Length: 173
Length: 442
Image 1 (spheres, each protein chain N blue to C red):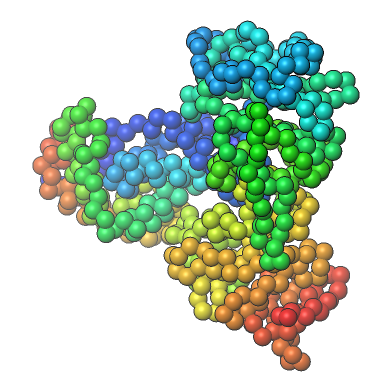
Image 2 (image 1 turned 180 degrees about the vertical axis):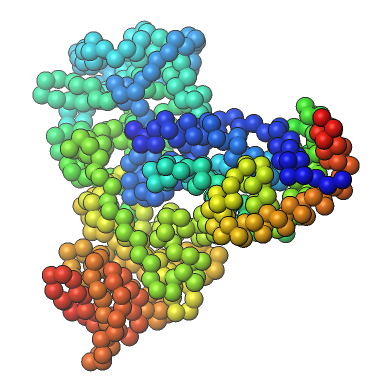
């Protein structure tokens, strides 16, 4: 049977899935959950491809954020698995793993919308208007979320000697 | 020292640098996406999702796979059936097979064809044969199944034996292949191969007064490798169903040639128009408008389809059906006592459409609570009384609806669909072509 989604959908998945996985990872704090989330969103995108193919990335981003918020609510009372337990740490440098833990832990302490605003604004480098579209709120609300989230994130990361050493290292270059 | 914006960017990127795309993501997404699409097409699911056998002429893509001896039970035994010793007939079958091979198709075969079964039927002599392929390439990237043979039924015609659809056979076995075929000009003979599993057979499909499916299954009596059954003529639609025991969608026994019957014009019918209507008050219990394509994406949402489990009594899970193009209606609402309300329609072949009302409280799954038949030619195609005095669901696409109790005042009920009070006695349907009053609630 011919598939009307064709090569464009395949190309989108091939070229954008890693970037979307990064967002999903920072939103969920868990690689497996991020992969599941990404797959759910891409399946949803597949179903609605004809309607959203003019801006699939914006649609995927919005779905990622909203599904991650819902997922977070559902799992709020369940203990999360420690990040390093199933994350292929053996091949990573120990510092990378520690940094990852610090960042994920700091992000987890943010309210979900602040977390999403920070991730989209600073990982994806999206303009405020696009973050607002992804969060389904006004640009003013995005600025507020970003500002508060960033302030809390700075405090949390400043408490990590590892992050500070990386910052120091980069600053001295 | 403070952390600048650029430092935050660096840290976030470094924390995600280890990520790479999950292996097989695209394939998994496509498979999952197709499942989601299929769930939306409950009616056609049996036709499109269950048939996995691939006709040889359509899709074999042979590669130069390693040749190896891959076992297949097809070649294990001698020819069975009452014509197994009829050399004249067997020669005709082999000749018919050679004619098909001579037409080409690119598949390299080896050895001689093996006639698995040859026997008499009320439609004339019939057979099933198979031949090993020269190589055993992987033909299913998902399961790594390897091609081992091609096989086909042979039907009687006035010009002698004629080979029907040639299918690939893989080392996964015959479950994905046609194991039965209709014979005779009226397709009123069903030949079922004995593959070693008990098989259940249902000759026809009926509906209870409330629209539920009624099928009676009997055990297929195999004898000497096959069973030959008399069935109602399968001319324009398929009423019979076959399933290995226990009867379930996973155990469906595929019948060769069902597409020729279901899609006699040579093409699948266009998707039926999908109508989604949301009643006043629905958004409070659904947490949004389920008719909105983005429902469940912007915020948490419930499933907008009832799902096969809730509709099990109304779904012919082992039958094969198409549709007549009548609308697929979904109505989303809320009952006065605060439950989510969903109405769905199911329609098979040229049978009447059925409407099913389902209710769910909170996060509980939907339960079918009322059902009936729809008549799309009537002024009020849908009227369905809900239990517990929760009202009467009415629908007439494109119409303005009003209702009243006894000789009381007419009350506005909106357009297209409405949940009117349980003690309503009449509904007035106003369209561009006029106004009709229909009694309800009886």
